[in-house]
Image (cartoon, rainbow, N blue to C red; front, side):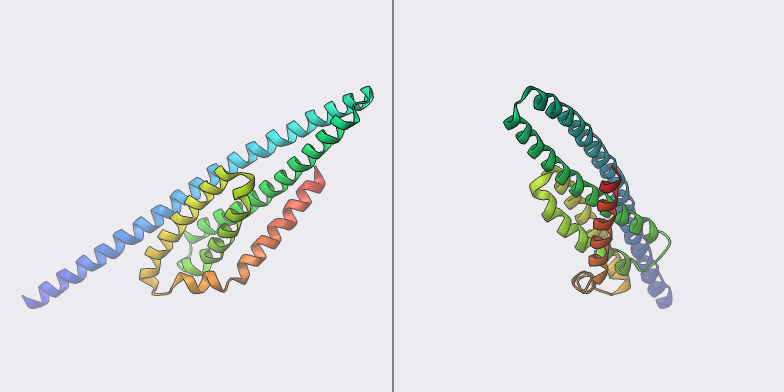
Length: 191
């Protein structure tokens, strides 16, 4: 009789662990879907800005023919600002793709903290950069970051490893940022 009671408590604990693990994985799936939606949104922004640059270049050519050089200079400054914004959005898109890839990799692997902790650091830096340029995208990235962080906390209870160690000592985060910058520069050179 006594053994039956202990076995029952153990089963309840195992059921609780399973429910929490399922909840954590569900949160990660939601974060992955949110990132996919955000990447699509960023692609639309980039496409819009590129189309606007083409229109502004044509307008500056027309104004240059007429001799309105002050307005041409103003339009070229606006184009330069748009190109900087496109570069930041392209870097953001590449970083989000890498984070999404890590989330999808998580489905196959059990070491969630080692895989995703550098992504949290990258997302934190990305939020700081984008707050000035596109605050609505920075807000969405922050909500995704919080979702990933909470699910990692849930998963951390099972692995008994703290996230803070991996986030604080993340050389991998630096590599992600550098690689995203290189890819963005290559894409900008191609267009």
